[in-house]
Image (cartoon, rainbow, N blue to C red):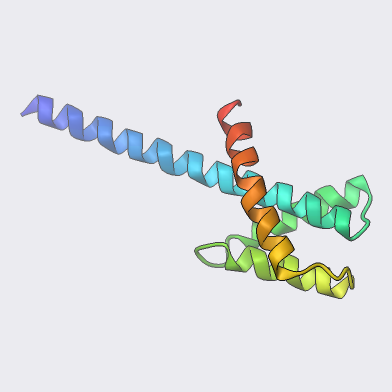
Length: 106
């Protein structure tokens, strides 16, 4: 019975690690997206960092990416950048593997 319990604990630990790593990857992707959007809006470095944090925090509103997308979409619209939905979603997709490699390399 102890072998089964050991395997169960190991599987739970592996699941927790995977979930934690996914959380870090998504946070990193959202920060990178925020920095990209800040650049499109012409923000300086300090303002860009602060804005990127607001994008990361926006992901806590609901499950999935739509809360982040709506945040960035709304801010880019307010800044009248002319950025399309497709460009934002493309950046989200492009930045995901970059974020994953950054988190794994830490």
